Image (cartoon, rainbow, N blue to C red; front, side, top):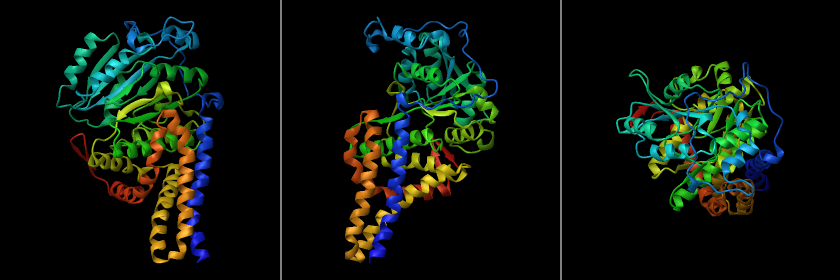
Length: 422
């Protein structure tokens, strides 16, 4: 019985070791412990004079908090990151039927602390059937930022095609991506500029994303899981074993994107415009991908509002797993799944052989303690430590949830944005 009990502890113990390794990686991302910059991509551009014809957009006064010694956050920003040294950014947004959410994002972009002479915004419309296009045209006339609307040709569909269209029209050396249903703070682009000032040889930056919504049990559990994914992705980047990132908040150097062939070898897949790119960037330019551990860079997006929407989203994410070329995300996924299944199997074994219950309890305590130890600083970064109460409930549900989503993702096929995807 002791041998069987010890077996129940193997995977949770390995998992706890992994979490200790990941927590060390998360700590490395903090600004005071930045690692040395990586290699520069071929033909990497320096800062430019600015975009001709751009008008200077000043953030709304209500969104700024004056800092000591400065009359505005913009003056503080220019003192810390000289505008002459800030690279130009092209913000790329793929949109399909986002008339309800896009206006808020466009207002956020117009309120950036970074002067509008340093960035442009391109919206690639993926055949929207609502008022998305009309809304963008109207905003382009009213907002004091360079905003352009691009429409996909009839024979092209999907997020990757939309992003490529926007990239081809972009004029900046750095491409920053977010989603049309997101919200960004006034310091979002400035945070990218400050990070590049510290690590000018970076080719890829992955930013933090936070789920928002009513304080329901479902939103807490979903937000807790998602924060864990962001934390793991950040820690793996610091450890130079990239696994995951999120297309709602990332940036990459145009020349590096072109050097790795862009989306060419996975253009047929509906998902993966973010992680496939990260893996290829690391393979070609090791040491040049970083996590942007800056609270000002947090992008907020609403959590899925129903269980069905959540499962559809997660199946979409899981569908790309079998196409990974990198071994790191595969190993990580298998160990995490194995540890969670082991806990569920342990409960079954305890019901069959009651003498195993102390071992089962030890396995659960080890796994949950490791999760809490890793998640505490991550949730602190997001200002959501109160979500830790949901850890036990999430653990109980996680094994069947992960197995179901993984199986559906492996099989492929789901509906997204009103389209059937294979």
